[in-house]
Length: 397
Image (cartoon, rainbow, N blue to C red; front, side, top):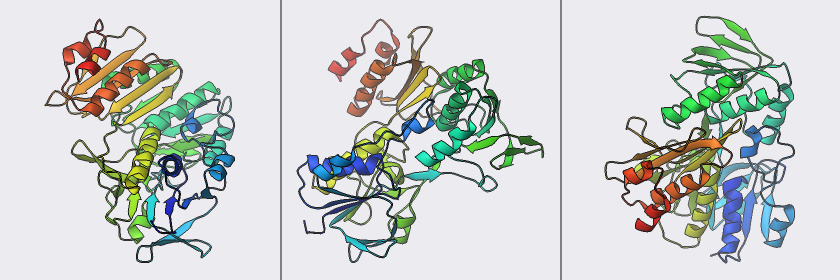
């Protein structure tokens, strides 16, 4: 490696994990971590949870100093010079690299006609939204996905009147099976959330929602939770291969052998399909994996996707990726919890989702996550039978 060292663009969960993983794996050269926000890197998942106060930093400031990581905050990258192997910052300065990691994350998706809605991606967004979520306030949320529903739960717990508009026939249509979504739906309804499923919204701004029939509905605040799109402008301008994210191989390496990408901005291969995830755990896992690959390790990325969401007093956990067009099976877990799973045509566990109060499903989901990662055929009848200990499957896999 040359004196140029390693440069990471993006100081979120993925970028920070990669920077420290480089040190943990023995790299002693230069590590530069460039973040656009002017504050210490912080955890994103709590932003949509109720009652969260100050942001939780990922690592304290002294950790970067102690490990010799050059953390540059409030710094914007204007372009990547692949020929010179350097990145140019907005202030005109250049940072040379031996290897470059793109951990640029994603931004809120806003369709035409919805540009004036509030969105949630960073701490400032969260503070702006929270200021409107007071008792008696009318809150409109466009999108019945994880973020939209977490915001709905937060708003109701703070005393606001909440209406959620979802265009699909049900909530969480792309994320979890119908059985799990039905429990979330029922919980929100019980808490007084007005769920408008199959709603045809033609436009919206920060204080009104316009329905397809022209009806205008007033709110004190409107938040759009319509998904996210990867931040790929730098990659595109640099001529890297891009399609729904920066295309990477099993080492998280892009079409340029000196540039890697990981986290929300990358499109990677998992079980023969190209996927892009917006996940706290995937950002961590891929950041560490990219760091190892940068230092020469050669092991295909095999971590199973995993996600969790808090919905009032319920916690939902998902691992793997469901095929919504294929049947699912269930494990009887009691009145207060549910666990749904799916196997592929080869009998391998493909995905699992559980929901219950607190961490009631966490242990089972963790076991099923490991089984997915091992890729071995499983006995679906054993998973379905509540009298069977799931740990037996781990020993057999």
